[in-house]
Amino acid sequence: MNRAQPKASHFINGAYVEDKAGRPIEVIYPATGEVIATVYAATSEIIEMALASAVAAQAEWAKVSGMERGRILRRAADILRYRNHDLSVLETLDTGKPLQETLVADATSGADALEYFGGIAAGVTGEHISLSGGDFVYTVREPLGVCVGIGAWNYPTQIACWKGAPALACGNAMVFKPSETTPLSSLKVAEILHEAGLPAGVYNVVQGMGEVGDALVTDPRVAKVSLTGSATTGKKVYAAAAAGMKHVTMELGGKSPLIVFDDADLEDAVGGAILGNFYSSGQVCSNGTRVFVQKGIKDAFLARLKERVEAAVIGDPLDEATNFGPMVSQGQLDIVQRYIDLGVAEGARLITGGARLNIDGYFVQPTVFADVLDDMTIAREEIFGPVMSVLDFETEDEVIARANDTVYGLAGGVFTADLTRGHRVVGALEAGSCWINTYNQAPVEEPFGGVKASGVGRENSKAAIEHYSQVKSIYVAMAPVDAPF
Image (cartoon, rainbow, N blue to C red):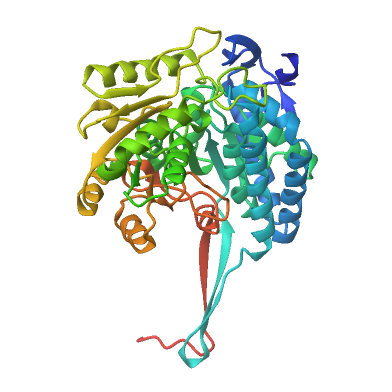
């Protein structure tokens, strides 16, 4: 597993940097429990080095034309795609996700973000507003300054690019802190950006736990904080950023509804439920973990779901035949098992799964519960694992009310042959990202983010430019000033 060993723990000012005075963080391959690398948490000296280099580099990067910034991002996208296989293997070692999945969903998604924002960087412009009497206003869109990105452990490469690409396109610098659970992949993103021509200091990576994140978020030199994480963590980071009046994007958790009407195509609906619950072993924030199934299709849905779930190929994630991998850590496995036990104890009917696998690594079977009630713990709390709750419903109005009865509002999906109803239902869902007759598609062209406790701001698309830049207005008078005295 030496191929996973990073050159050093941090990437600062265009080079790898090490400081073993920081707390050691072991990187564990979730499929075996083997330690494959060790990184060291950033010391105060490392944090200062990263922020100082970002501040200095950002002032010069902001002067670079959007066209040239975009050219560098597009070159980095090309490099990511060219090295997709090696980056995907690293992502699998870092996260435990099957190589079958990482080959198509991780570095490729990151490359899409770099290419997309590279393509629109030259178009980040202001506007001209004509006024009466010949006066006019023009606006310019300016970078915010130094942005801090804090990543989650489920999509480390993708998140490093989703946050970095719009930030850099707008002329900002970034200091990115990946999750301590999956610290490796973002170092390669930084290395590739620099190789593509990004000036030293514009994109930096530092490792560490919560205290490193706190130091970055509260530093007065930081203008913007973008977090992907749990709602609990998000509230803390949001509050800390607010104390410094910083811009924020909070992409947090969810307990999203997936609604299946009687007239839905059965195979598509089952496939959507699988994508919305078991991709990445259920470790996806937008997952539709409350699957509301209309009573007329319930028995057929459960029977086909059971057949397809039990056909999952579970095993070595580096084998491309494997399509279901382990939990990312022992701690996450324990959390998932506790929720499964709660589901059984509270009276939900176990359809399939529910057990740990007697093999090395942090494996648990994909699990489906039926006859779940709205007040059961597994229907209220985000599990972040492969546990699906199937709930019955009868009418459209009923299911909309129940679907919205949650503090979260990240995502939602509807399966139906009646597209008028599909549009009507997603229009009534209190969620930021919705799908009709599919689930969990997230192309970079589409805004992604939630409402309520699921966060603020949007990742991706043109909407992200609004969150990584600010508008300056300039009023130009063409006549003498008329003052009262």
